[in-house]
Amino acid sequence: MQKLLWAECQKLRRSKMVWITVFATVMVAVIVFISGGVGYSGIRDVDRVGWYMTVVQPLATLFVLPAVIALLGSYMICREEQEDIIKSLRLIPISEAKLTSTKMIITFAFSILIYLVLFVIALSVEAILHFSDLSVKMVLGFLKAYTLDGLGVFLAISPIIALVSHMKKSYWIALVVTEIYSFAGIFMSMSNTLRTFYPITAIFGLSGYYEATAENLMGSIVVLLLCGCFSVFILKVLKHREKNCNRLSN
Amino acid sequence: MLKLIQTEFMKLRRRKLVWLMLLAALVMPLFAFIYFNYFGETGVDPIQFYRWSAFGYTLWIILPFVLGTLCTILMYDEKQYDMLKQLWIVPVSKMEYIYSKFFVVFIYSVCFMLITAIASVLFSVLPGYVVFEWGSILYLLKKCIEIGVITTFAILPILAIAASQKGYILPVCTTLVYTFLGFFIVSINPYLHPISSMSVIIMRSNDIPGIVQAINIPLAFLCIAIWDIVALLVANISLERRK
Image (tube, rainbow over all chains, first blue to last red; front, side, top):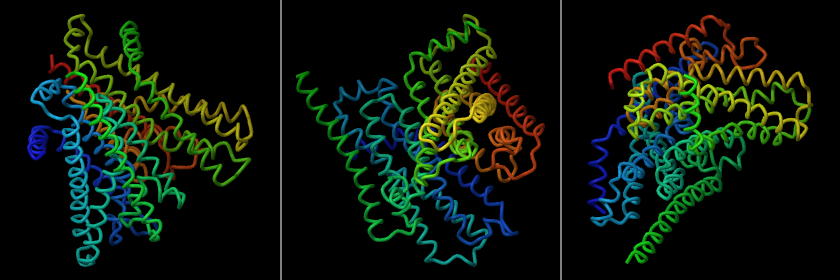
């Protein structure tokens, strides 16, 4: 497993994908900052302490980052099939289920990393705009929220990435489905019940963006964990099928 | 040119995802239906319903995203299977190639918006939220066709990026950022981005609530034209270089 992780990291290092994803994250931060230049009754939104750090996370989560993370995950999974390397890997031999699990772990780490990049950008902007008003407690609170966002987004989209590993060559479907899935969060947030149980909005309950009661918080955690379990189940089915195929070929 | 367009459509027939993406046209009419059902309102103003189902997020997010993805798919396929060389041998000119793709996106965009219009009428009239009137339906159809046509021009920069890149990751990420920018920049200055300029053109009669700033139609067209001319130049230069 360690070797597989190392190999995946090496492959990612050579790919432009990571930089493109970071570029998308930086652009999201810039766009939100520009939109914060508009204000009501003489005060711009960005001039309010904490506004930028509070608003960047839901907007990035509802519109851009889940699709980008799903794209990265599905790209890594479909890459071998697409570039016809999977046959060489099977000859080694490498378990496809283990390979997919490794890619899922990398996607998980990347999801948290992307949100940490977003946090660093947001914190830097806040520090430049109102350094004196920032407190350690506030910064740590946001750090926790962004990290939980990264974790939650991975759990919420993991079933889609796991399904891609089943279908292969279907990274387009993963992208389109994830974008609509995350975008639908805007409407799900209108109802208290739906926003607790819809995975994308459940992330905000978990991270603390929404004020949630203990029951709602538990509901959100359970939903996200169920998403994670569902993707593990899909990967297990994949492993089972692989074993059956090997037995038949023997 | 017509043969080239016909070939493009024949290629599309084999792509299931392109047809599946048309289902995205039903997303906002469905959410509008759920929204009005949640509040239990009847006798709703048709514009109010259509603002939700066709003139809102469909215009800002869904259609530009779907068209951006379609542009990337159309361009990526030939590069992936190394078909471009054969096209240049035929010979097909670089601009003809771009125009044929653009035409496919154009037809797709109009069809997408017509599906949205039909779904909007079905989801509003059948449950009784909106009273059936030919006037409002024709207005919706007119606006949807306008959206379909202008969005194609607004998404041309993505087609150019897809043409200039070998892979699909950058065009797709750019589509996401481009759409996001178009949606948020409208409150700052709608004449900087083609998608926000498009919304100004669509809402020119002030009959759809949304834009509060003064409307300047020539400036909106100028913005789209500048972006499109630059996009066509970039696409042409990058295709020439790859030769």
